[in-house]
Image 1 (tube, one colour):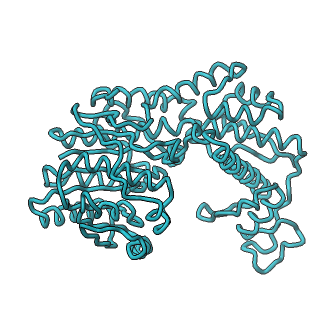
Image 2 (image 1 turned 135 degrees about the horizontal axis):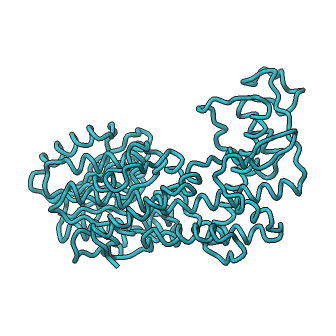
Image 3 (image 1 turned 90 degrees about the vertical axis):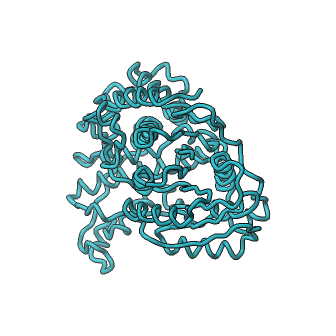
Length: 474
């Protein structure tokens, strides 16, 4: 069902009240590395942080090892948790019911005007041979074809429109737009020269049947630069059909595009924008809409909350392969939290900018292997005998292990994974809040335009979790 601006504002208030509750706010602020602490040579849950109710922790500890996997799946997917505390069930129910429907649809989820539909998909220009030539995954092909569909819907029956692609990356969408039937003239801009170089390489090997044109450019993409670019580009195209797009514009780039677009002097320029990577934008970029600021003056999304916004636990259990990836990620988080407890116990302080970084999956097969590799990446010794090694960042400093029996670690690791899954359930709530705030922002700034929110991609079928598109029609 399509909702209007009034419904969006009401949803924002409901979402905001839930996120402002002490429990939700504490969970959003909780850091994975703060879950454990080492005390008297042993590892235990750090309950003094108070983010997780004692009753929830007691229930999680009561779950037997044989039901650990099943319980994690049920926590991720609204499974049967009748034995869980009622407050936990209520929290999970709110996480499931408060966000709006994100399943792929040709009808906008929210719109300032009725009567517009997106076509189901774009022209079938991305055959298997083309996908192979440019290394295009099935997920990316799905995203490109769905974007072509809604772009065709926005532009109508025109040939050779001019398209400005901001944050164009490897140019997959730009390239497809240059082919029939649109045959667009595309200016594809990215802030990263390596992305431009990769896009130009794919232009050469992609066997595209170009009927328009494609130019790649590298330049700064902040609000001021985008505003200047929009003014220059729109004036240059004069009366030609035009469109501004951004497919998975990361973090602050989406915010800067929206602000610059809303301030642009071109009165009929359309926009199709799919934001992503909320964790890469500063907390000061929310809220954008005046209505949100008025209704929820004390609500702010911290950096930790924005990190949670990228999570979608329901997707973890969508297939065995996805579940295996999720369990590996949870194991890594548990190991990292355990290591952090050892570091604090040793009196070692690591600067915030120092990161362990990416470790091979094989390193995470067991704790001992992970510990040695992670300490090495931090420049610390795993044992006292290695304390003087010259290649260490902290020569002479060794981190003594905190011994944990296998059964005890099995329980602690499960509780950590469960807590993190419970926290991650806030992800769709926070993302819905961000998306609706941006929708209302555009409706406020562009009261005479048709503004829409679309669930554009098949989230679970394709793996395109960031599937919300903001559309402004001519």
